[in-house]
Amino acid sequence: MSAVLSAYDDVITRYAPVIGLETHVELGTVSKMFCGCSTSFGGEPNTQVCPVCLGLPGALPVANAGAIEATIRIGLALNCSIASWCRFARKNYFYPDMPKNFQISQYDEPLCTDGWVDVRLAGVVHRIEIERVHLEEDTGKSLHVGGATGRIHGATHSLVDFNRAGIPLVEIVTKPVAGTGAQAPEVARAYVTELRDILRTLGVSDVRMEQGSLRCDVNTSLSTVDSEVWGTRTETKNVNSLRSVERAVRSEMIRQAAVLDAGERVIQETRHFHENSGESTAGRSKEEATDYRYFPEPDLVPLAPAAEWIEQLRGTLPELPSTRRQRLQASWNLSDPEMDALANAGALDLIEATVAAGAPAEDARKWWLGDLSRRANEAGLELGELPVTPAQVAQLAGLVTAGRVNDKLARQALSGVLAGEGSPEEVVAARGLEVVSDTGALGTAVDEAIAAAPDIAAKVRGGKTAAAGALVGAVMTATRGQADARVVRELILARLTQN
Ligand SMILES: [Zn+2]
Image (cartoon, rainbow, N blue to C red; front, side, top):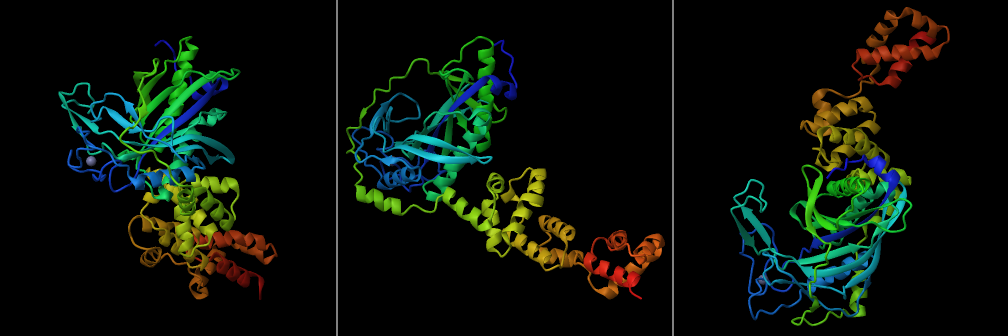
């Protein structure tokens, strides 16, 4: 390809992106979708299998009621309509890790349709419309052995593990999302983040992207900014982290722009995202639509959830993340941008726990978004990975409020906590960080500061009390920041202005 990659900023001046996301979620049910086999992760290969999930002749599936219930709850949380009657369908294709040579899925009769989820980014609300939420079964897993990369190229042989085959899988498909412009990569990430939080709150999945229980395919297309017609889309697979969702959209926009700039056409295809390079490579062409020869699954009865059951499930929905954020924002008295900054930093749970441990919300926010965010950045860690607990942050804030340490000493105490020296109380005691406010102990330092700067002392004596600041500073330096500045100031003024 002769095209030169354009910079992202240049791309968005000329092209408008349309994105779409297909998310697969492995449900956290104890047993598989159509049999009683265990769904636990990490078992010895092919130990969690039976005639049903191996697709042996004559074996008959029975739908897992818990999985249907979880899917309806997901649909309700995403503001979907729930079908009063729908069917499973056979999706026929050959793949080595799919034992039956068809997958039981849903086709034209999904369980949940036409929902939405709002994501807020820099104060702007983007409504992401949900096309469908349907239920299907996962495939097994191929392991390619003998090569350097673990991929089929260069492998000497391949093994198949069917433990995953038949685990209930929910597919959540958005409608195309247009009009997000330069923010498209961040909107994609914010949507998957929100979806993950909703699923976690519902308790239907452990939503661990690194273990594949939440998997994302990202569709991207570009059209010129003045065009009404959407461009050809590609589907990027293997996007295994929230950060990569954003990177995948961004890199695909840059790649497609370069193709279009070179006068070539974007090929409709799947692409594989590579975590290390942040680039994708071409996969399977989708220029010709695959004919999956769908037909209603003859071994399963239709799904017909009763309206009363659906309403009963609606009543079991927990407080969802958006409602919780609104509640906390009101109780902490934060503006929209302040709340967004806090949510984007992943600090919501930490601040809530710090407040619960007794700190004022303002102090909790100041510590987590200030010093602790900076230290997390420097260490390349998430905020929650720092070796400090919300209770310790609350204790530190309490020491400042009580006047036992000032901000500077508190930061030193925090360094001690992060270094594993104990709680803030323990670090303050061990390092001798407590503020000195005893007038007797400070008197000598005050006298020395006055003696060392007779000209300033004269100014203060002459009525220029503002000049006392320099003397306070000298005492603070002499006491390594541990003096109570208010007390020092009072002592200086008492000595110089009262006779
Ligand atoms: Zn089984």
